[in-house]
Image 1 (cartoon, rainbow, N blue to C red):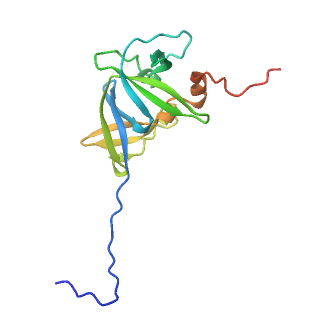
Image 2 (tube, rainbow, N blue to C red):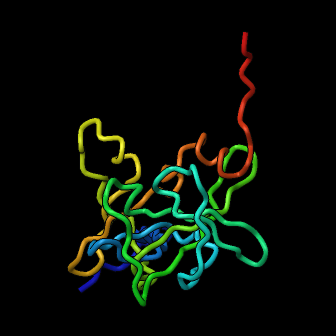
Image 3 (tube, rainbow, N blue to C red):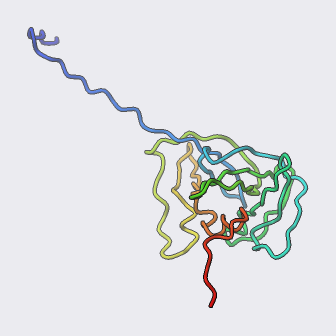
Length: 179
């Protein structure tokens, strides 16, 4: 039986704060599950005609025309030090808008398939595993638990460095004096 409340006494209640959730676009690449923050994703397009550009880094597969704009396309598998992505029926290009100091750069990334939009709470995300000084570890923002499976969360801002983004956007970067 509950005690009667005294006149003038405040009754305190603890109200749980809703846990912050973030949305991620989940995709497959080389038999593994990955995801990236949905805020960077502009759209997903079916893999189509790609124009190869000579003298580009090996992870730049070429460019596509997206409503008249030239968009460089990155092979994430190669960027991660793996073999070229084999193009199949469900292969697609995720179009990303990656922020920089001066505006943003639009790039595409080839993936095996796009599976779903995940909503992960902070409690469902673990920090990225420590890989020592492996430079590829900077691509990871964490590991999410989606049901009974784990998904590797990518940090879109680090898939390309600032210098590489500048080169892709046609910005020559800071001038260097030559003597």
